[in-house]
Length: 285
Image (cartoon, rainbow, N blue to C red):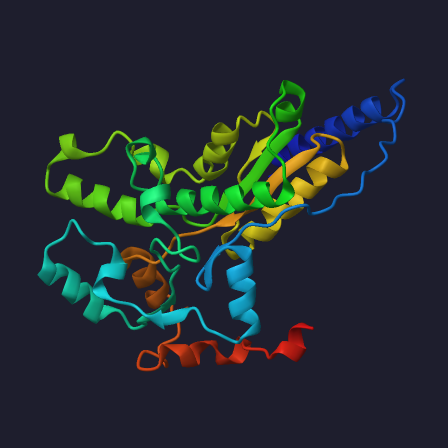
């Protein structure tokens, strides 16, 4: 114990001397950089209320709900036999979710456009949501840089909480069935969180900072905050920022059910689950 105490004292003494050496050096304090004002110039949304800012805001003001009862198809277990799908669905204690509406109408997320083309094999659903919302935000801001300087001064900060868990589930099934050669070479690019911001940068040629926060439910707020600081301190002039998620699948829902984080009271009346958050028009004005 005495030897350890002496060694500890030596280390502490060394640290103190080291800090004194650096603090007493001839260096001047860093220059004060004036912070810049940061403003929002464009918005884009893909939400359970619809695809697009106008649709989402309109339905929100009208007190509509994006929550509905889920089906077996929502679990994204296409690679499993029907009995396994039904058994898994029956085991879930919560059967309501806020699902993004998909289709070809203007207010729906177009899967054929953002997910199913040959060029999009490395794009999982959460990445597709980010690309769709970023496209709307850039058009709203009228920002489509073409020269090199503007591209280098434009960055992306888009994060996600869990990424594509459904791809992980499918890959696990392939390994369990001993069919490793069937595993897609795009498996890793589809599940990486930073690929959402990466794909947005690649699509528009942005060459500024590329950032991806992973902080669960606070991811979107942190991504916007980090982007604002980058602009404020002069690292970049323009940032595309936000959060994306596509966690309505068998494994994600089962995990949250097991942690008792999901409601079990509204399986028979899913729209009732949104009532505590509904507001009339006066509340928003």
